[in-house]
Amino acid sequence: MTVNLRSSIFGSWGRRRFCGLVVMWFLSSSAFASPTINSIRLHASPEKTRLVFDVSEPLDHTLFVLENPLRLVIDLPGSTLKKSVRGQSLGSKYFKGTAVTDIRYSSVKQADLRVVLDLAESVKPRSFLLNPIAQYGDRLVVDLFPTLTGESVLATEPKIEQRLRDIVVAIDPGHGGEDPGAIGPGKTYEKTVVLAIAKRLADRFNAEPGFKAVLTRGGDYYVAHRARTQLARDNQADVFISIHADAWKTASASGASVFAISQRGATSETARWIAEKENRADLIGGVGSVSLDDKDDVLAGVLLDLSMTASLSASLEMGAEVIKSISPINKLHKSNVEQASFIVLKSPDIPSILVETGFISNPGEAKKLRTAAHQKKMAGAIFKGVSSYFQKTPPEGTVLAQRVSQSPRVMAYKIKSGDTLSEIAQRYRVSQGALKSLNALKSDRLRVGQVLKIPERS
Picture (cartoon, rainbow, N blue to C red):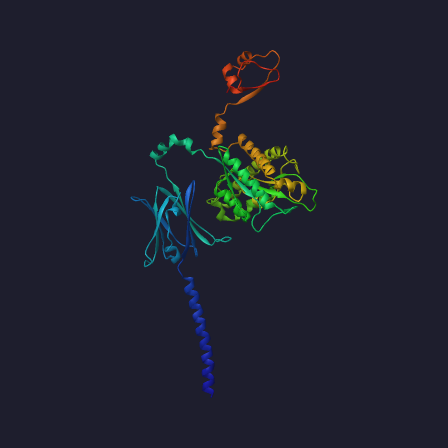
């Protein structure tokens, strides 16, 4: 009896020890599990092709370029490739616009993983690891920058004019989908009104040579605030315009407003971009055109401050032009550009404004906002204000910048009694023919009070 009792006690202790050893073995084996490539993402931007490996943990890697044919080899010792990735069928659309024509992998039987990229052009690769943040885990990023030979540079010189780009205008209709925004009298939904205005605004910009519009949503669905600004950045937008319709607890509030980011909002956004290091390689648009992926925190902070300051200044100037254009067609709630910490305005590198087209809670304004005629007028006013700003300060390298630089500078002269076309031409050292052509005059006759455009001499 005693023996059985001791045996039972020993057996229980032995089972506990055995279970402990199993757990220790499991933990130790997990610790030494090989890193896994869970997915591979490829996308292009004007300056580079980016390849992103979503990985289970940080991993070692080496890369080198081979010629004849051009290939980039990425060695990932001790790593494995997820079966779904290896079995993924990649068509030509997947590689469109990138420097890559195909992706191949070493055999599953090999201990070390090798990824080979077939290249369409010579590239200079750069790689770095990114830590987990938000919805993303560990990542290995490989950027492929094109390298130009002396021959290719010479070959492209005659085509400089072709490289001029359009000004990209990102237009953001607020709310959408399950988020209706404000609801006014007569079941006037903000999401519906602002989408209609945004589409009309996009049509105006797309009809104007030198401009290209991008909508953050083209239908009745919801897009997250950060995703809206990211879409603008992905399209290298020069400006971000968010369209809304205000609401208040009383029906008497009325008038349109224009907002830019507040200084407090700008400061908080700068801090966020410094903290979220994954964003540092993504600043590509607008005034700042900054890339921070290889900068330390201090330098990144200085560059972001400069970029945000430039963007805020541009936003305020542009907003003032929009207010000036809206005032003839709609009452203004405030006659100056207001500032607030709207999330959609927080782009360090893209000038951004938010236009409240009126108070949808006001019965009179809600009725107007529902009509196609007023929507068209509002879109036209916003277009006029934004395009007027860019006429004065066109971004470098754009079609508009070239057009403005080539346009003759003119001054205005008001005709007085006794003035003749020949005397004015002699006084300003310009031919009569040039004056007639510039002012569309069919004869030499002038009238008192008439304003002539006279080309300035450089």
